[in-house]
Image (cartoon, rainbow, N blue to C red; front, top):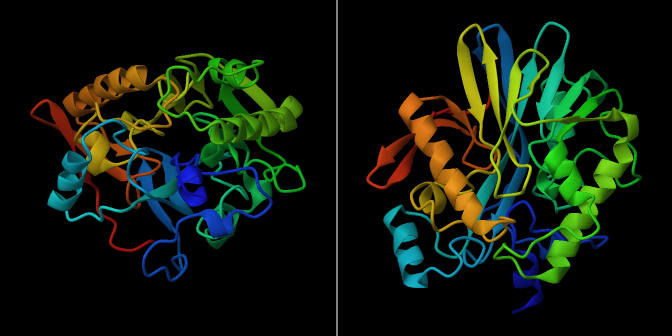
Length: 328
């Protein structure tokens, strides 16, 4: 296994603790830079919601990042059938922003400086939407992987959203700050990546001090968000139900990373899940509930702007994208 392959083994975790990893991150074909406007606005009841891009991640090779242990020809055929490249998968990094009368809330913080040139654009893109770092009052962390928590602090270890309270599941907090977080039920075995993921989580959590607020499964926060435990990807991984005036939206975080491979084949899974089998069970359960309720969904990694629905298709599911022709 060459060096680049070893590093690109974790969507959102395809990172390594080096001073400059930009040369190690796979580049997309025909890369021309970020969109001029990388945000999309919509309403949910009385809330003003916005999707802001932090950039994107390129996973290469497809396996074993996705569908570890599955016959490679089956995976290739599924990608070909969906007109998708067979040598890489691109993941969006979609940040949901909630604006109410007196609060500006982020759900996750993006990659920060932990990736390469294709990510880490959250603050710049927030500013394009007239949101400055000091305007952010709260940050909800769905789980403490580097592409979700890594944007909380800068390279100087200073808080990038200095006035914001940060909310994290107590289960997630305790897992990452334990002496040796347990990856024995994961398909990920690269010890360098595991160490890096742990180090980034510890570094960001420990930097928060009194800004950190821990929540329990089912807690309702800030009068518009209920955090629901959806374990497997990490022990404290959460889905967020955002609600206002009888309207709701489910932020599914890293329940799925690929519509083609994981929504359509929940059992194929993702190598970086800390408990692979539990993640499969959770994925099926939550997607079944969302399909039956016909709920509007926001996904952190599915194509821009990450909004859509899931519907049942045989024994699996299908992603139905809500189209946004161009960013606002």
